[in-house]
Amino acid sequence: MKKMVSISEKEVEHIAWLAKITLSEEEKKLFTEQFNTILEYFRIIDELETEGTPPTFNVQNLENVFREDIVEPSLSREYSLKNASKKEKGYVKASRII
Image 1 (cartoon, rainbow, N blue to C red):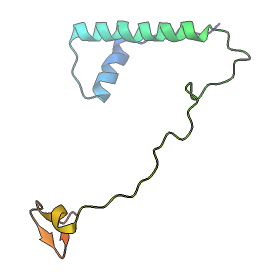
Image 2: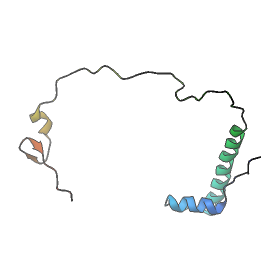
Image 3: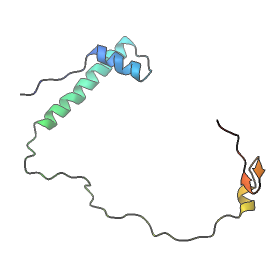
Image 4: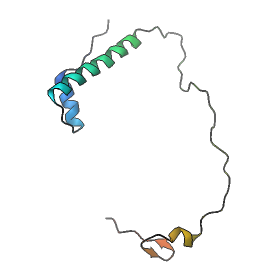
């Protein structure tokens, strides 16, 4: 039999600290209950008999759903640079980043 795993309020506080959020005492209790409810659903799923069931990676069985590549005319350089605040030698000039 598998060990029952549950989340404590202390662990919820640690998760909140990692996420850099502040939780009230009520929220800590609520999240503790919600995490433990989610874990309970995983326990139920773990009990299902899956022996002989092949793994499913894609339930829709789609293959190459990309559209055909159609060559279309590009925007002109002048039109593309029309609203650029800084331009140099036909290119947009950006600030130096170090």
